[in-house]
Length: 355
Image (cartoon, rainbow, N blue to C red; front, side, top):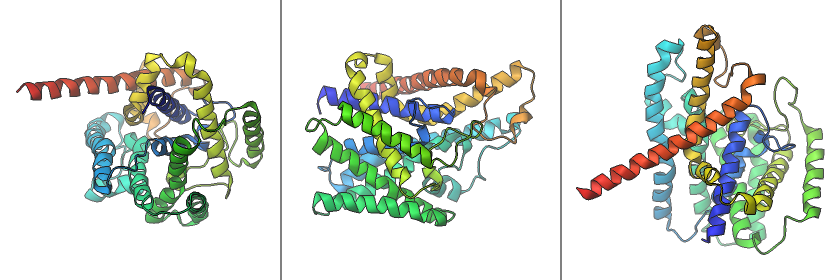
């Protein structure tokens, strides 16, 4: 892979995780393109861009286990200890009862077995989707047929939302929906990028017009309740049979466009690259940082901690004034948490090699 490709991928990952963090704070990092309308599928798209069909199935599984599931369960173990430790302090156990099913199976079915690790629900789902995609990639067929198949799966998945109360069906429909975007990323990298100009002014304004019309279908926006035009993939909640696909496509295109037009200006911004290199750690830890900030605000203002016990895990202190403080501190702390873990890992590996 070229240095430019690696840099653009890294910056795209940085943008993707920043969109996710901003979404958890209920603001849109890209105007007109709300986070919950494309944020998760952007990571599936990036995974498709990085998909290497040359690996054998066994080798591919080993690599994905090492890069995705091993750190996932390490983090789950750490956060289980944290959750147990802070329960007496906050007056609440932030998670499901500790059972083998909840700790080993629920990560795949919901990913919400622990409140503090809930943003990581995406990791086991990405692992599953990539394994299924690897299997399907062995089937030889016309590219139009292949693309149509994945799109059909996504549209069927949307129709399956009425059965999403069954967690196994939920797991299936999330996989069906996300396969389309993995393949789209693979297609973009291998068939479109560098071969077609998809970032010209006509397409730009066409995407804006499409997005403007998509807002007419919005069913969940109020100034109090949210930022609108969203679908909730983790719970299989869709407001429309086609809009989730269209708004995902427009959001992915706009993300690529932002990186494309800004690349020459930001390609040497080391902190942005650090963000892109630590997306896993940002995903895993930003909710803990947000809650530390919240409880600090409560303590400073003399408010008892139990005020938060009946609130959602994403409850923030005075959001109209503090939202961007949460955002900046959360990104800074979690990025350098990842850098610290990498430093410790390098030191550990060096120590082992010296022995």
